[in-house]
Amino acid sequence: MTETTTPASGDCGSGACGCTSAAPLSAYERTAAAMPVRVAESLEAVATNVPPAINGIALTAPGEKLEVHDLKERAYGELLRQEAVRLGLLPAAVIGQEALSAPALQAQEQEVIDRMLETEVTCPQPTPEESQRYYDAHKAQFTVGQSQRVRHILFAVTPGVNVQALAQRAETALLELASNAALPERFSQLAAELSNCPTGAQGGDLGWLKPEDCAPEFAKALFYLQESSQTTGLRPRLVHTRFGFHIVDVLEINPGHLPGFAQLTAQIASRLQWQSRATALGQYMRRLVGLAQVQGIELDGDASPLVQ
Image (cartoon, rainbow, N blue to C red; front, side, top):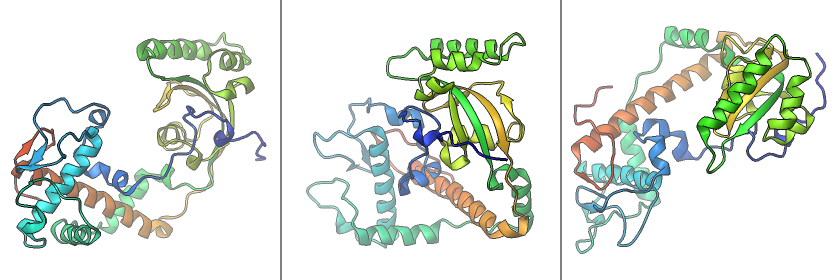
């Protein structure tokens, strides 16, 4: 197969295009799955008149305002600091007697908390059988060298847009293209008329894409679903990304190759270990929340004993 020189998604010039490469995640974002934070809440203001506090320790200074995501990050940090104090790993004198507010953690204190988590949050190593089952169930994710030549029509979600009406417009266009009466050139025409991506001027052509070229949700729809990762043609459903709704047509496929299980054993074991630890960490944090007196902020808690 010969790849064309059509620019890939990173060259389309659209900041709203769901096919752009995802930015590297911060350390906090990489472990966000372990923390009981509701995504929707991170977009909301704190809707309470009660000053946020953990066990009577204020999370904010007088007059300080934080977004919900940042406030929760501070709350989890304070929960961990107080647990380290309870275990005798950090001195209680860290908190001043006059102003009971959450102190900023210094590097040395963060290291103490990290060591505490290594001790308190344990998880078993995955067995070879578990690794084999994971490999069998996720072969599409382990395939290397795969790429697809793709075109799309983007219906971008922008501030103030009626999302329901936008989705209906996208569905209507998809139904037209899926009709047996649709002419081959109709996709390019609709891309020029409707797409909010600059590639609409080229019939929506994004060129050859690899999984790493795409936003995660776009990559999942193209490469990681067994029923669609190896088939060309118009996708029967809209692809939803953080940028909007996409009508996607796969023109050509380079299937790549799948390494054998033996080559991936260490990688799979590491991934399963991370997932297990993330689950155990989330449970640990919920237990700390459940045992704490939490005011002015909503955190998911469970006071039941920790089971690992």
